[in-house]
Length: 251
Ligand code: PEP
Image (cartoon, rainbow, N blue to C red; front, side, top):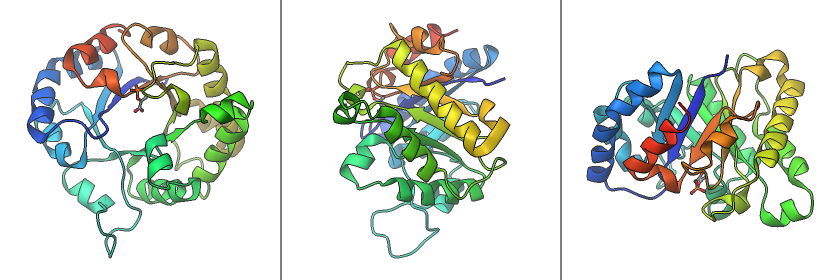
C-alpha cells in the first residue's frame, strides 16, 4: 500500500528565520497527516534545512533540493551526502527541471547522484518531465522514458524500493497551466509501466508524484488518479495557510 505524499519545494525562498517560523507552525499538520497515513514534507534551501529539521515534527520529511555525488573534494559551491546526513537529512530532490535548465543537470548526472544517495540509504525524489516544445511535438513519453531509464540505470529492484519519482511537465511549473488529470494519470501510469519493465513487481511500491501548478483547489483531482501517489508543490507550499489547505483537501 503506497502512502500519500505531499512535498513542498521551496526553491530559493525563505530565510532561516522564515523557515523556522513555518516549521513551528507546521507541527500540528504533521500529526494530522500521520493520523491519515499521509507523509508530509518540505524542501528548504540548504541554509534552511537544519532550522526545519530541528523545529518541525520528527515525522516531517525534510528534503534537500540538490546534492553532489562525491563525498568531498574540489567542488566549489557544492554540498555532499555526508554533510546532509550530519544534520539529519536523508531525502533529496534530484533533477528538478530548473536545475536541468539552468545548471546542466543531465540524466547521466542525475543517475550519479541517485546511485550515490541510494548507496547511503537516502531517498531520492527524481523529477522527470517534458518541455512545452516536446509536449506539443507529442514526445512526452519518449522524453520521460529516457529520463527514467538513464536516471535509474545501474540500480536493481531492492535499490529502488524507497525511491520517489515526480512527474512535472515543465510547461506547468510555476505557470498556472496545470496538466489535466487525464494527462497526469496517463504519464504517471506510463512511468509505472517503465519501472515495472526495469525492476519488476517493486514498481507497484514506488511512489509517483504529480507536480506543476498544484493548488489547494486542484490537488484532490490529481490524488484521485490510481497512479498518482502525491504532489510536489512549489508556489502553493510557501505559505503555511495554503500548505494546510493542500493537506486538508486530501484528508
Ligand atoms: C515545483 O517547483 O516543483 C513546482 C511544481 O512548482 P509549482 O507548484 O509552483 O508549479
